[in-house]
Length: 588
Image (cartoon, rainbow, N blue to C red; front, side, top):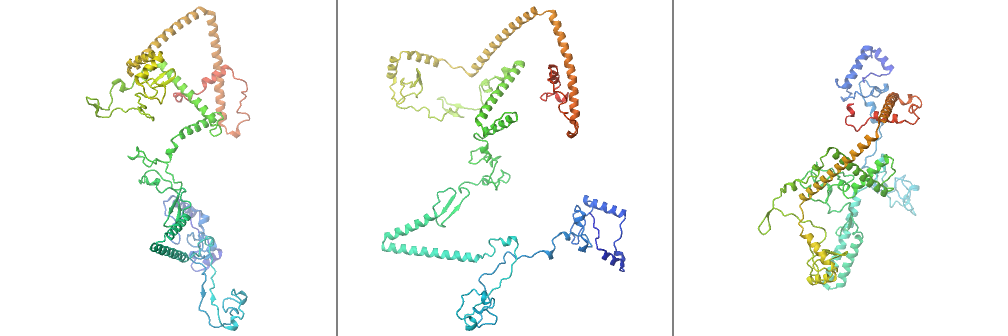
């Protein structure tokens, strides 16, 4: 971009005829245009300062020439962009926002006698009789000379822009509202004073009816403003007699006040959401809080399961299964469970196959280190009486139900005794839940009525007398049983292999072996030929894929292969197919 003087031919001829002929624009040659081009490129690259206008401001060198060049009638002799800006003489001038028509203003002092050219009805100079808005007088002011009306204020014509014409508050006078407010406050103050005087007079005279009537009037007045106080999000103040609509309960702490660190979780004021946990990275993170971020709800309850089902539905749809989470959720749930079951079975089969091939299953089933070493990091010190002196005793697992609660003088809980499909109390062998305990007498009575009860009780006592085995002993017994099973299985497999080997050796013959070898060689030859054809087919496919789609020959995608493939061709395709799951495929 470079500046070129653009003046009309008449100015050029005047400059040529004038004495100062040096100002005449000279014709530029090829070298001058080349220098201008190099200067323009240097300005765009930033190596040369940019061109400046008449005000000393830089002109962007990337502005096109047709925008920067001023027209001939503009009369510009220096680089400028003033012709692209709004011209002050052509801009419309609008009234200011604080300018408005005056209301109810009378112009000048009131005349005392009728003036020539004034209204014959009221005597004002600003209108004629036919435009007069006053009541027609029986005898006009022209003849009486009395009651001359003041002249109206002639408003100037205000020109507003689009927003000014549609401004609701244009011309609003704040003093008008202040006068209304002051008047209302005076009325309310007068009502309070009058009510206070009535109460004082009633107290002096002892008239209780008047006092109760005044209180009832206050209650009625309050009920008028408190109809919707019980609604959520409402705030009622009896002193101000107003109801305010709240966007949230005022007692709740705002989300952005939980953590005042500016680097904490981001709060979006438009949606009023804070997705991350504001206590993240602080010492309060592990404690329980009423608010842990909006995303906490997304990862709690059944939200995660629903998201997993949705992902499974999308994956199943891509693979051809027509399932939908909203249309048929039961079908999707059953399909998802079946898929998970098969997936677990496949993983277990893979693990078993690897362990059977390489071994090492006994290392996976080793007990934890706490059981092997019989020690932990928790230190507990007991006294000679069994009470804990130092440390913390092992906590007893509790349930949500009440435990060790004995009712009706029983010494055991309901359900501690079972016989013939019925539950009861072990202390008295009673099968009635709300019964009182009878002790040993109840046991004797139950034993006499149920002879078989003693045998069952003896068996239970024998089971209780048996000393329970430790976890290490149970683990060792399990390993011993598995070793025995493996040995028996290996012996059986060896016997089967020996029998099969004998049968094959007896039944096979030399002629059969020669025929099988010939068949295998012939099949291998066919497979090699099929592999060559497959390689040629793949090369042809690569050649066609390199050609643009519009330039490919007609029906090139089918390549005249409409016959059913043979077994040799299928075997050649399997051998040539690239296994992407093979970790060494990239090195071949």
